[in-house]
Image 1: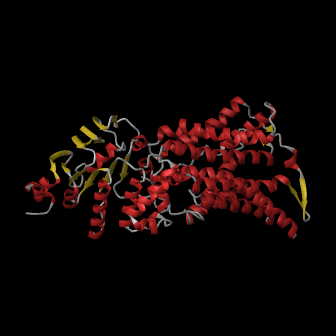
Image 2: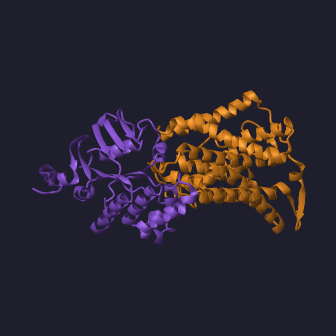
Image 3: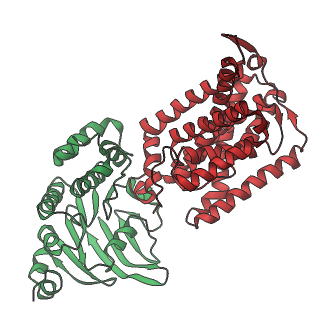
Length: 297
Length: 234
């Protein structure tokens, strides 16, 4: 294998990893505050991809408007999911919440089949993302470079919100102690809504980028990336935002490099990811950057 | 200012408060003393809306609190330093204080912060430190300071002396008196009956969910039953 190909694969790995990272952030944020693995989170990729298709084709909005718009709408959709499926269960045992999340996931997938149909739709990828550039002898699609850049920009914005703004501080407080957060005069439901909004709009960004990378949108397109992102979140240390991003990059790189180094293993790519999950849970359940997992009062 | 009438609280099948009636007049320090499990903390939790009474009323000025969500109760001007301090360990001291001021106009923040730092100079030294790394006494000061950052007219304090060294306990009670002198009304829950009765204008004794005795701090300090049961005299 030449250094060029290896570098090329490295960049592909980073790019794939940054997609996992975008989605993993939402898992980790919701887990941090509700101690819930939101299994419906992956399906938001699908919701966002379809929304983007309709925004571009039916409403004929330019992508510069429709993509951010879809992020906002998906964020609001995330709030709706919380209101309908999780908020009534705030005081219920956590297992009920998890079952509700799985229910939402099935509901979204099947609703998409009924309303839109199971036949994959092509994604109207703007041409500027499909261009191939020549970088020191490497031939790289522009999208591959843009994805990690977008991820890092969104991550910076998110970290700013979480660490520097009042709402972000309230989010961190709520991740430790609901009652005392309320005693600060903070409307906890609003803080939770903001959490869902941010996580879901990042998932939308991930969904749009995913659909541009693999321009076949179908009702189940969110399942595998959703699971991979969940693995990334666990690998990085669930509840930790930076950890989720690190986990995403590690997983993406690992997947691509294994295929690059051992081409005969290509079919085991997904198995690799799940093996990572099992190993992390066995040997380091707090993940790369996670703090000890605490139960919440 | 605060009037609790015939308050009944149940935890599942357990009748934790069996008709509590008490008054906290403006400008006063009122204390609620009693043994573990008597219902002191439950009373405070009911006032701050964290548990819902089955029966009874809680009036704060003209507002009925029993149906109000906690965050709205707090916004009426009530500050709470909960049992066990409950500082946010993953936030810095300054960030904890900022959350205490969540609903205050930002323009007032600096001034309020200076006030808290003058009450608790240690908090200024530790402002950038994670609250989880503070000592017990410092955490108690932070919990008090955080409750005061909202400039509350009524402060609810739950066992501020718990687990603190005697010298620190004294400091905490001095601070309570000085906050009171600066205008805050205080409802203080304490197991340390001696210290609480010394600072309180009025006191209630709670036993298994009922108020069994009340009077001025001085009267109760002199009361034989109180001396026997709570001050450790034979």
